[in-house]
Image (cartoon, rainbow, N blue to C red; front, side, top):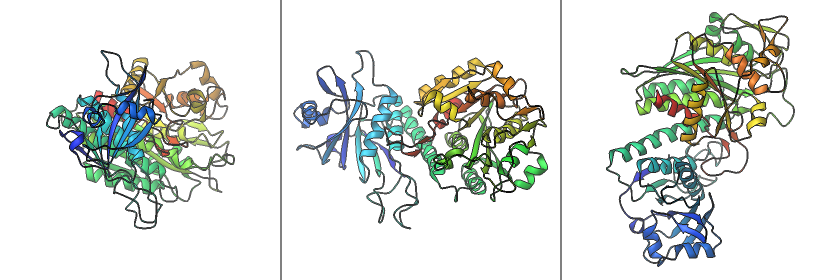
Length: 511
């Protein structure tokens, strides 16, 4: 794991492999950001000019390296762009700081220690820099470099044996008020949160031959013991006895049977309970409605919702939040076989409702429906489900923004605002009543498909059918941002991203 250390020392006096400074985009060229005064002094006040000569502009995410002059103990200065210079009464926003720190940490892969001298005077800014650096210092290496690479998550120094560079070993935040309680708490929160986001990324990146429903349940059980979380696992026999027709129907075509995992974190002083439900399709072939060529290769990521719920519950426990948080992981593998659910089959759900399966590739809503019904039985103050549910949501909002639907407009707005605070892009979406009619079935109570246009909203309306009256509920469709197939940027790696975790933790804190 990448270590985080707070230091009151100045950047010039620290021994490190590199010093990270921020530069902003000014009207007349790059402007050195606060926090880098000692470094700029070592350049005789001409650091901005030197960087401009090298082509730096201060644009967000831009990284420029320059050899250190005499007076600095670190051999390299890495300048990272923060975007436009803020106004007189403004400061650098938390998200630009996160992204800048993440870009710098990625650029320093293979180094043992880097001193970050970014503008981080407040506890909020310290937390943003720490979050960005620790999320940027991530690589999934479990299957690279032979047997002795030390595992998959961020940690270690130098280079994995016979493999790629390991992530940055230590992040040193300089010039901070390390003895200030608020600053210390902010750093501690960043460490706990980012470690769980990175654990979720590991789960999403793990190949489906290793991360089966049973294996995922085992990970959750182990984490529960470690963090004082009660864990209950329903196997295929318990699911059959309990009448969980949706989860069983999706998983019955696989040699790896399904699981429903309940995680329960409680606090003795808590007055409210938040229930989180995650779609955990550990591999989605589409079932009998097989996905076309080119659409299967990344379907190990279809359990990203369950990974997000798992990480959020563990983070809540680690932070000791004064709220009860229950997590439900609906785990199954969707495969075609002689025992698989067929288009036209009717499933009797845990709620007692019957569902005509018109498309076996619309399976996420089936496992979520059972888990949502079960979660409603405990009468929490609110339920939020998280899922890589529809390609339609990606078409609507792109690859970096998740959609939010809810049966309560104020709750939907709250989640959107908290996501913005957390640095996660989201957008409120409607649940138009007229789209419900498209799911009418002549055979069952409801079909799992409706109108093609507005498919992401149709999926939300389907889930709404399984929410008990009087329960506040929201649905996050993270199909776009959950898995990043392009080049890394900011603190976002290639592969699993850990989408929605920071938003869920913010929501738990608000409770």
